[in-house]
Amino acid sequence: MENQSNPRTQKAKVIDNFSTKSGEHHSSFSKKNRHALDKFQHRSLPNHSIESVFKKSKSIKDTIREKTPWIFIEKQKEDLFKVSNFTEFTDYILNLEDFSRYDSCQILIHKKGNPYFLSFSHLAKQLHGNVLFDLKSFNQIFNSVKKSKTKIFNQTSLESPHLESVGHFMAKEIEFKNFNVLFFLSMNSFIPNTKEDIEEFGVIIDFLSPYIQLLCEDISQKEHYKISKHLFHYFPFGLEITNNDKIVFKNQFFDQFNKDECQKYSYSELAPFTVHIYIPSKFGTASEVHHFQRVALLGELLNTLQHELSNPLFGIKLASDLLKLDAPDEDTASLLEDVCKSAERSQGIITTFSSLYHDNDNIRSVNLAKLIEEAITLTKSESKQIRKITNNQIGDDVYVDINASYLTQIIFNLIINSAQAIKLSREDYRNDQITITIEKSDDTHVLLAISDTGPGIKGESLEKIFTPFFTTKSTGTGLGLSICQSLANKMNTQINFKNNDHGPGVTFTLMLPWTKHEHKTHSPN
Image 1 (tube, helix red, strand yellow):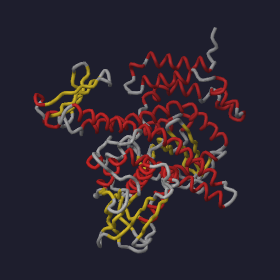
Image 2: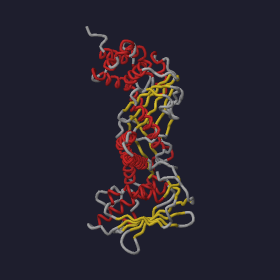
Image 3: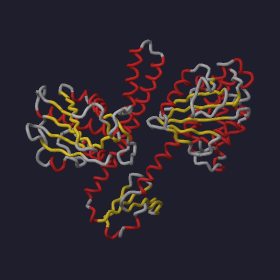
Image 4: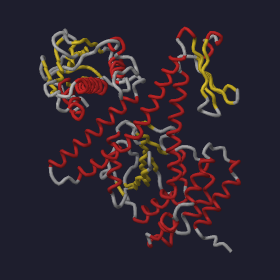
């Protein structure tokens, strides 16, 4: 006869019981729950089972070995499967028999690559959580919890305006592939938690981690769904989505166009759904539609790039922050601080790329000379051996009201383009140079000019230089200058250019609003 106390048998029983009752649950997570628990069932049992966790602590083995895991699952599994968001999940935790003495439960979630994190608690009844943009605060809390051996804190040892716990509380960090999660549990008491409390807390959170990951992924899916629906709804032509010829979605412009005067394009890559786009003939032919496809593909590429690069950048910053806390001397600490700032700057550039088609009002006064200096630093690998000269005709105290991230990207791209043009035009470029000039245009504007000694711009390039996907380079994407002009337009200005009158090369110019304040403390970042 099969041993009913065996952990694998117990988990199989839970899944079997849930499978027979799945029709009773209306939560959209039921199938995912079964999949997550099925994965959990087949984890390597002596290393990851609840049994192995209990063996680590003889002090609580006898008191909670039988009590916590299997009674908890059998009696409250149905309530768990009804939980569909983190706010409900925090309520669920506090309603567990073993946690009935606790008064506060809070979960902080950061999706790697996002510039914000989410806070959920039983106190904040907003199902989607509070959006918090102080990511530095999250990283500090995460680092502190990760380094802690006891996982027991108070308001003095872990101080943050984002934490709702009062007095002593327990905390645990969870690292998933795409998310970092912080879990807090408190009795809102000034009596410290015991070692048994924290071990019991760790057992339950470890056991529930597959479900926590499931809820994290659902947040991401809902975010993608919201963005997709927004894009479909505001697509500038008629758009409908069908499923087996039944219309399931129409955007706001669908009924505004006469379908007999439109070209219809259908895409079935989203099977079983088919997307139909109706474009009036006066707006162009299939080539324009293919252009939209390429732009859409670019958007997907940028999102993928953000996701793939944000994770290692976050890891670099996190590791640097941790190492900086134990730096043996000031030089090492300063070096690690530079690594952190570079990772943040890189993350900012990636975010800028991914938000090119969104409004951004992040305009502030920044020191133009310092911003140019930092942009030049970013171009060193591509423009080495070519002299870069800054000709500041106004002075170092020049401040402009702009989006610093946008302007940095423009300067970066223009310098890179100049360096590449020079290198492609000749083998020996030791005498070439790129000059960045700052000069007063009028009482309200500063003129920024970037000139080079390259081959200049000739032929059809004069008319198409800012056209997306137009390039004269064999390996170019044709997007650099197009993106720069797009960013300039977002700052209510534009990039102009002309070939140099005296000597080879080309000069790009950009007009920027001048802030007339002499003593500023803002940095470009």
